[in-house]
Length: 148
Ligand code: SF4
Figure 1: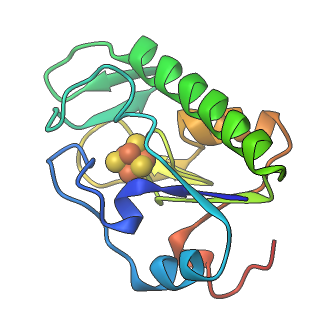
Figure 2: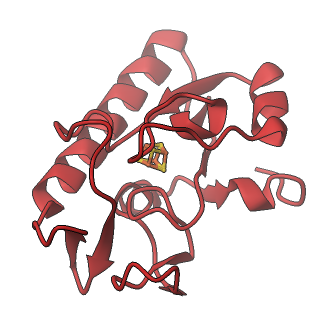
């Protein structure tokens, strides 16, 4: 079973109430066992919500509010839900395709905390949790080149 960022599947769970529909991800999901996740969507934060970025080891939204606990809680709840679903299906989690650059779902690069679109090396909160579990994470940008 593969975990997929819900916004890539067209779910309107993005901070601004929109989505990040991606046809390559949709095509992948059509022929693999997949489970949609949105850590921020189940964190208790509303949708729409202010954008947030990592500043050091904290997640701060554009209004200056520290939302780290929401992000950590949403990531943990998403992993718990995914593990339960995998067990129900009698499958294991093979990997995850998560939205690039997000403070939750980004892998390898995230925004730098200045809300200027500048990227730095790093992983989102949910990605970190998956990597700790030895679950491979790629972004939608790598989907054509990476085999799980
Ligand atoms: S990037 Fe991740 S947390 Fe953000 S809307 Fe998409 S699935 Fe939800």
